[in-house]
Length: 545
Image (cartoon, rainbow, N blue to C red; front, side, top):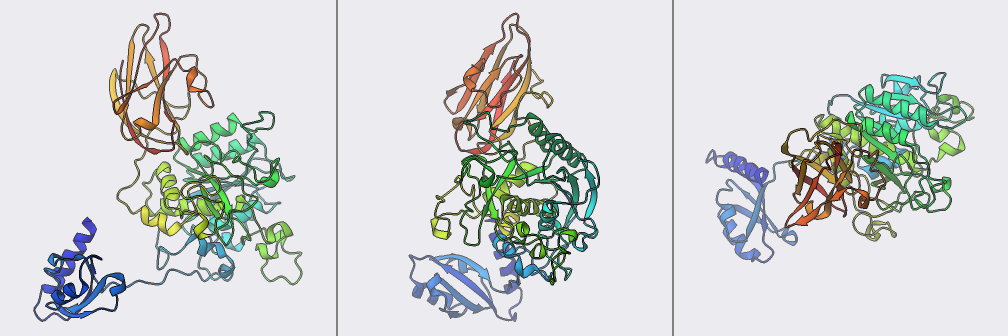
C-alpha cells in the first residue's frame, strides 16, 4: 500500500504542477459492483474517457490531473500509464534456443538486460570440470580434486552441471548459464570409475564452505529407505559436512534422486543428502510440467521441482571430439548417448543452485534460510490444472512447493517483508554449536520449518537441584513442542520425543516446560524445539533457570 500511495502522490504532483501541462493517460480501476456509466460520467471532468477496458472494470482517462479521482465513489485505484514494460533479456548464446528450460524457469525474465551484480561463489561438488572449455573462461576461481589426480572430468557429469549454473552468458558462444554472476569452486569427489567416497564428498563440502561458497550443488545421492535399515545409506559424516556448510552460511542444493537407482519406481523417499535438514531437495519435471517418472517422491524432503528432461549443457571436449560431423564440440548435443538428451534430478538441481546464486547476488545480505524460503514459496504450484495430473494443490510429494520460478523469486526478494533470518543455524542436533541459553534468564527469536528445519537444539547448563522453566510463544506455539534432553544425550536425530526427560504442555497460546535437575545430575542439558505439524515461521523461546 505504501508503494501505491507514493506512486499516486508523485504522479498527481507531476500532472497538476502546471495548468498548461500536456495531457497524460491514466487508468482507473472501478469496483465491479459500481456503475461504470456513473463513474465514467464523473471522470469526464478530468478528461476524455475511454471504455475500451471495461471488461476489466477499468476506464482510461486522457486528462491533465488525477487530483480527487480516488474520492469518486466506485474508484478502487488509479495508475499513470506513462510507464513502459521492456522485453525480457534474451541471451545471444548460439545454443540458448535449445535450452528449453530457460523459458520454463523464467531464468532471464526479471531483468530487461543482465545488471552488474557482485560475484557469488558457487561450488559444484561432482566429477570435476573441463577447465579449458571456452564457456568457462574466467568462471572457475578454484578447483581441487579430493580423489587424487587432476580435476579433469572423465564422466562429464560435473562439467554438465557446472554449465547449467555458470557457462558464460550472452557471449554469442555455446549455451547460457543461468547464474551470470557466479564464480565456480570445483570439488572433484568422483573416482574415475564413477564411485564417490563419503570421505571425499565430506572433504569437498567442507573445503567449499571454507572457500566462501554461498551455494553448494550436490547432484549426487545415496538411497534412503526408512523401512529397511540394511539398505538405508544415512551417513553421519555427510550430515556433519552439510551441517558445517550451513553453519558457514551456504545454501545447499541436492537432487532428490532417480528411481532407476532404487529398488522400485517410483521410489517414495528422497535420497541423501537431499533428505537432510536445510538441504533444498530438487525433483524433475518435463516440458508439460508432469513430474518425471524417474524422479523420487517424498512428502517432506522433496522441496521444489525444475526441468530435468532433455537438458542441454556443456560437456568435456574430450567426450565430443569423436562425434563425426557434429558442430557443437563441447556441448551435450554432440556428447555420448547418456548426455545427449540428458535427464535426471542431477540436472534439475543446478537450476535451483543458479537461482539461489542470483538471489544472493541481488541481495548479498540474505541468509541461507531466507534464500531457501524465497525459492520454495515463490514456486509455481503444480497440479492437474497446469499439467501435473498426479500433483495435488499445495505442497505435495511429487513436486514439493512446485516449479522453480526465478523471476518470481527475485521479485519476492525485493521485499519487504522478507522471511525472518535465523542467527542460530545450524542447530539441528546435539553438539557442533555453541551454547545459547547462557544467561540465568532471557529470550530469543528463531525460526522453525516442518519441511526444512524441523528441530532446533539449545544447550543449557543446569546446577543440580536448579529448576529450568521454558516457554514457547508465537504463531508456531500450537504446531511445535519443547523437549528437554539430559547430559548423556548424543543425538536427537530420529529419536522419539517420548524418550526426552520432559516435554512441554500447552497453556493458553504458549508451550511451557518445567524441570528440576536431580541433585546428582547437574551438567549440560539440551532444550529442543520441534515442529510437529506442517507449518513454518518465527517463534520466541523464553527461559529461566
